[in-house]
Length: 172
Image (cartoon, rainbow, N blue to C red; front, side):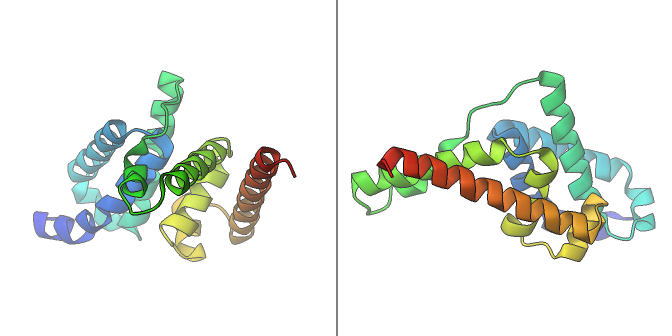
């Protein structure tokens, strides 16, 4: 694969890879480092990339594996990067509503962090990145049925956990 083909096939998925890395690592700088490592590995192995059916699926798999390896190696969880919540604070909502939205987003991040890695990955690929089930099957190596089960369980855990927190806080 030459430079032109690399730019056409790999660079367009960079933002997806960054969001995936951010979801796992919960830190912008760590996600940038992980993305840089993945891109470097892809570039270093560019001659073998034509052998893969989907280079995008390979890149997603590499990003996921690298992030999980880093989390295990450092045995740490960084706090949620609230940079994405700053847009809520700068909007024209009332301070009460801004606080409520930021708190809800933080609760969801916490609940997502508590999901098993497979559920977290499937949920992210399907609901955030909007991959098809076939693409998720190719990326993860899971069966279609397993993907559907993990997605359903992840959504149910998030729903139950969020309702439990919000009902507790409102006293219902």
